[in-house]
Image 1 (cartoon, rainbow, N blue to C red):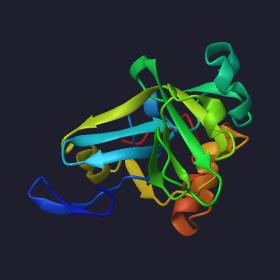
Image 2: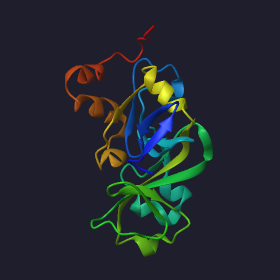
Image 3: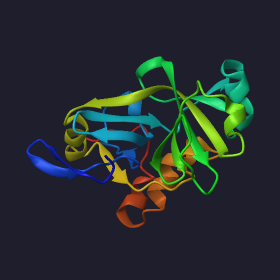
Length: 196
């Protein structure tokens, strides 16, 4: 589905699977204040993503013991979003060359979702690192497109390492700064100033 044209709201649009959604200062939902979301699916029926920069203090090894040593530093669970916080989505960055593997669904390049019911020992030589998210962010048909049109999100290209940065709290300003120009200036927007 990635890259295919879709008719949404009477217009054709490209899939945004694999793109970053970067919250703008205009976004009013506190669940997404200064967040960076990786879209792991975007189809005519809606979109699904995980918040990349909300680390918890719960070690992955405490919850998913066998996966703990594959978790990228910080090796903790992340708050993936407000939907189904008791569920888990695992992102993996595969070692090149990226192969078709049971339980791995490619999102973009070497990054994809990984089925946590697969034996991690079978994947060890192919997986560079993982990150586990509790919950996810979800949008119904046309909802995300409307939020983008309303100025709540910047849609930006992801780099392979964005989902696995060592300092996730720095991801929001880092992604904005690398865009340059006016978007880089948004990275310095004071956190407690509301836009009307």
